[in-house]
Length: 425
Length: 123
Ligand SMILES: Cc1cc2nc3c(=O)[nH]c(=O)nc-3n(C[C@H](O)[C@H](O)[C@H](O)COP(=O)(O)OP(=O)(O)OC[C@H]3O[C@@H](n4cnc5c(N)ncnc54)[C@H](O)[C@@H]3O)c2cc1C
Ligand code: SF4
Image 1 (spheres, rainbow over the protein chains, first blue to last red):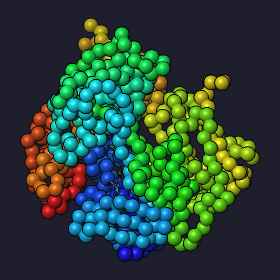
Image 2 (cartoon, rainbow over the protein chains, first blue to last red):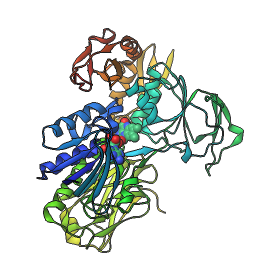
Image 3 (spheres, chains in turn purple, red):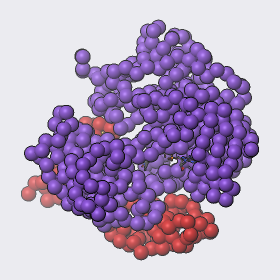
Image 4 (cartoon, rainbow over the protein chains, first blue to last red):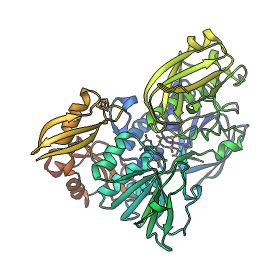
C-alpha cells in the first residue's frame, strides 16, 4: 500500500493547477496520476490559439498554455506517475490504479482531487437512422488524428453541431486540403464562439445551416453521404426540405459530458444539470475530502476558468488537510437555479468558510439574450443584481460574490435567475 | 461598380454584421456598426485581413509524430494556403524548445514559423 496526503487524478490543465496550488498552500506529499504518456490533457491536441487571455493577457495555443503549467509543476516537489490509469476510488479514499510496468497500485490517501476531464457525445446519443459505416467521428477524435497522429480521416466532410471543436476542425481540415461542405446545427444559433464562426467558417465560405439536422446516413462500409433537413418548431424534420449531401466523413460536434464513472464509485453525488459532482464553495463534493475541478465538474469553453476553478480546489484540499475533518455540508446553504439559468457551480455554500474574500459563481443561460439582469435572491431579500450584455448558452457567465455581501444577509438559501431585459413575462 | 461586403465584428460579443460599400476596391461607406471600434475592425478586415496560422509539422520521434507550430505574428489571410503548402513537407528532429524557429520567413512575409511545444531528445 502506498500512502499519500493528496492524490490528483488527471494531468490536464485542471489537475496541473490544482496540484500546483495545493503545493503552494503547504501540502507536501502530493501524487498526480495521468493515464497518458505525458501531461497536458486535451490541450495537447488543441493546437490553435486563443487560450490564456484572462490568465496571461496573451493569446497562446493549447500546447503553449499547458507547457507553462507543466514547467511550473516540475519545479515543485510533486510526484507524477504517467501511463497510469485510475480504475477505482472509494469513499474511504482508497485508490486502485494500473500501470504498464508497475502493475496494480494500491494507494491510501487523505484527500483526492478529481480532474479527469470530459468525453464527447457520440452518435449513440443521437439516434440517426442508417447503417454505421466507417467515416463517422467525434470532432475531438478527428482533432487527435490530424494534430497528434498526423493522419487525415477523410477528404469530403460534413459537420453536425456547431460546437467550438467542430468549428475549429472545419478550418483545420480546409487548410489541410479537405473539402468541408457545411456545418449543420439544430438550434437557431451557433453553439460556438462568434470568433470561431467568423474565423473558421466565414473565412473559408463554409455554410452554417441553423435549424437543420442530419436525418439519414448513407453508405454501408464507408460513408457516402448524408441527408440534411430543416426542422420545425418542435425540432422535427420537415421532409420537404430534405437534401442529399455527398461526403466521406461526418464529424459530430454535439457536446461534451463530464467523465464521472470514478466519482460514482466513491458515492459522490452528481448534479443532473451539469453532469458533474455537486460541490460547495471549496469545490468539495458530497464525499468529504474529495474535490473536483475542470471539465469533470462542468464543461468549460474557456481553459482560463478551468485554471481559476482548479486553484480553488487545490486551496480547498489544503484547507481540508490542515483543518482536519470539518463537516463540509453542515450549515451549507443551497444555491438554487430559477428562470433563465441552466446550471450553477457551486451548488452549496458555507458563507463563513469562504476561502477568499470573494467567490466566483459559474453559470450558463438557457438561451441567448441581448441584455439580461442577473438576480441573486434569498430568503433575506435580493443580495446582488448585475446587468449582462449578450448572454449566450455557449459562453459561461461568472459573477463574484463578496464574503461581506453574503455574511451580512446570512441567508438560508440563494436563488439565481436571469431575466431578459425588455421581457415582462 | 460599387460592391457590398459584410463583416461580422468580433471585437465584442455583440457581433454586429457590418456592411462595407466598396467602389473599385476603395471604401465608400461603412454601415450598421454598433460602435466606432467596429469601423476600424471592418476597414482592416476588408482591406488587409490577417490571421495567425497554427498547424503541425512531422517529427522523427518514437512516441510523438507531430510538432505543433504557429506563425510568430499574424500573416495576410490570402497567404494562409501558400504557407500551409510551404510547411507541408517539413520534418524536424528533436530536441526542440518551445519558441524555436522551425521555418523562417513563411510565404515571403518576414514572419517565422515557431514551435509551440518542447520536445525532449528522447520522445
Ligand atoms: C476534444 C476537445 C477539444 C477542446 N478544445 C478546446 C478549445 O479549443 N478551447 C478551449 O478553451 N477548450 C477546449 N476544450 C475544453 C477543454 O477540455 C478545457 O478547456 C480543459 O482542457 C479541460 O481541462 P481538464 O483538465 O478539466 O480536462 P482534460 O484536459 O481533458 O484533462 C483530463 C486528464 O485526465 C486524464 N484522465 C482521465 N481519466 C483518468 C483516469 N481514470 N486515470 C488517470 N488519468 C485520467 C486524461 O488522460 C487527461 O489528461 C476541448 C475539450 C475537448 C474534449
Ligand atoms: S461594432 Fe462595436 S458593438 Fe458591434 S460588435 Fe463590434 S465592437 Fe461590438
